[in-house]
Length: 272
Image (cartoon, rainbow, N blue to C red; front, side, top):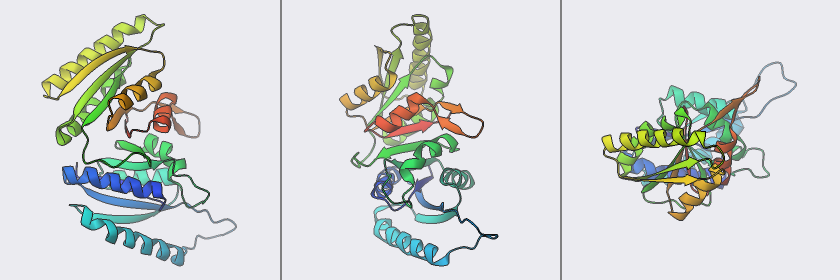
């Protein structure tokens, strides 16, 4: 892991995400790049005219943040301005910079228009070219990642997250908790879950990852995952995001959205 991007809107939530990112970056010798997106729309104008004073003000605040936190990071800490739709610009920057990870705060919505983190977190997850960690402000910054929970279901995509999470587990010397969720009412899916669990266990053994495995019968996938992760005091929950779509945009599927919204533990979102 060489570069981490942190979306920042100057809210307390996004500053907390930066502090969390620093704790991760220092363990893997990664650099951090902050990104602030000007998402204001000018109406009744034939041509766009940049507002230099607004950008100048934001630049001063970002310089202050850099000066405050650069001594806490082993690597480099920088920032970039973008203008447009927040989720698009964050994703474009991640692709351009070949970022390994995006970290974004959730529940950062306040009464002020310029604070956009909370309302854009879902879309950043669905549009990002790389994995995204969504983080609630209430989660304390810890020195490392020791326990990672990964749910296993009946879909083939459920195993796609293993490669990235394997690398994280090796980097942080973390223990992976494989939680296989078997629906109680659909017996036909049980075999598929069991097969996926066997494949996951084989993969982890081959890569010499420290892990434990548990199978749970439940029809409440998100509730079961959150309950288990909370019980063991996990540091991270790693999931494959579900994507739905309409004619106009891509949105986060119900299970992934519930986890991002309801989990007090950070959620690592990996695309299929």
